[in-house]
Image (cartoon, helix red, strand yellow):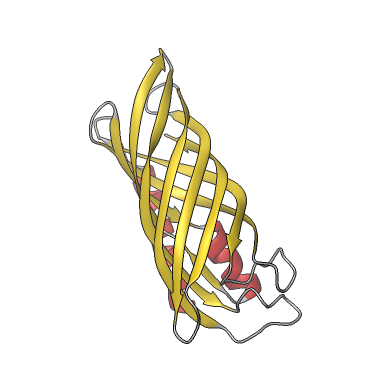
Length: 196
């Protein structure tokens, strides 16, 4: 767990350093993603739900590194920050879901574009199962699986490279753990992205 925290901290420092560099002539941009929603989850304990409840609310803050392939196409790397740190410090758990996304932009009018595209990442879990809550914790276990998502929304362009995107993200994760039945995570979240 301490190693995971150290790696997350190092990545955070690198993203913050990179965001401070002169990127005016670069195809790279950096930003922050805020997301909140809900999920069905028949594997992991939810810290905001009672024992035995399969799922609950989900929220995170992520740092984004985005590379423009062209005016209408881009790829991004989303690095979760809030949830891994919060879960490690207060709940002795790991939930870490880094992801690459592909983005297609279709301009609707001068400063407005429709944005959509898939995402692919990995979901890592270490902690109790959904049968647990904070007072009655079961045995912790490691689980992982591919994270598959699709996003769509509206992007509002600002001066320079600054723009924001508001939309919806749907996601699916098949989770696998030793000595446990395969699991399913299925959900959606509203997200707001600020790029600069």
